[in-house]
Length: 348
Image (cartoon, rainbow, N blue to C red; front, side, top):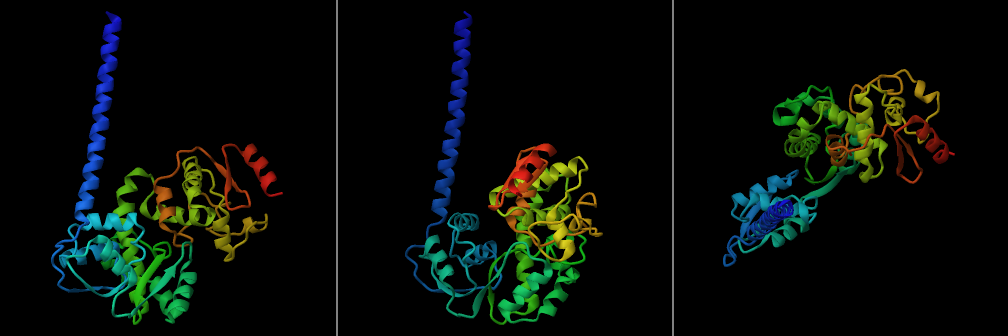
């Protein structure tokens, strides 16, 4: 009797599991089919020309909306998803385009990657981990625009406060931490303010779509997330280690242990050293996290998306220490004794 009951219970579990699997498979097939259908041409028989203007600094979302408003794509979400999946979203260029309704998503993306017919744009790149001064210098060198004007704009976030959602949610004295690293296609006649707005628009989109929905998962405020992400940006060279490095610092914050970040000490000194001396870590500065508890007063650079997401979605580890191995990676440990042994091995 028990065996029959037990067997019946197992069969019920198997049937329930099969039902879950079937639902998952059906959902996957439905989603794939939904996306494929919405990537097709709006009208395969209509080859009439439609002229569209993609403004400089447009995000993938902006471009999708423009295309949808001109009846050139069937669905904005499907287009954005596919652009991201094919790594096309970072290659799309501003300009004037002549498109038609008989073009599918691949054809439209290829056109947007090749560039518009106007030829009045060029690309600039803002790399991860730059201070305001470094970003201003890079932008000035790439565009020929005025370094001091870039600095002036970066030091006055109130100029942009009413135009971007994330600036309404923070109280900051300058834009360091919030100039989103990326490659941008801009107009040749762009001003310093135009370019700063392009960077802020990209950050704002990331804030709305990725950061804000995840803030409920952390005890940190939005400003603290960016602050810590800027430290992670400098401490971790490998993207695959950023979530572990973030978790080390989060674990330390949780037990009121000093962060002891070499990156913040380097920022305090205004120069980068691979190895700090005892004299270096004695500098009297609110950015010296070997002395000051908690986070520094402000971000020490503008971090990239991976570092920000690593703070919001850290690794599930209980490490409290890490030491550079000399090849770009780190050795992580739980105890001080283990950390000292690793330091002696890798710093020898």
